[in-house]
Image (cartoon, rainbow, N blue to C red; front, side):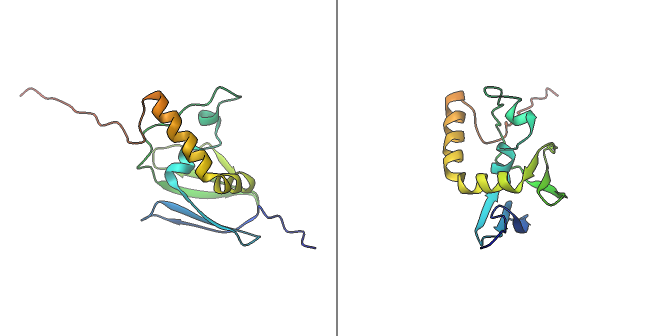
Length: 131
């Protein structure tokens, strides 16, 4: 009988060109999570709030990338995104949940964006100058 935690990450690699985090778990399961997905579902209080109903819908994150990944003990990583967000600790268990339920979470997110009239794309500001 194995005592290995199936949620333990054994391999983690970020592909800058694809903006995808590749994860392998101790039970052999492999997943890929986009930087945008990880940013939108950050476990930080800034994104999730401090309780039900306090979540903040993340918009305009389609082009976000991961700038840095730092280990936190033997149970999590802290991800710094190129938009400056760095306050979420991604535990192995949380990453596994995101990976296993990625399609469900993403579908709900897209529905929330549509209902709010928001977009995944960053806002484009057009500046007009009078010479």
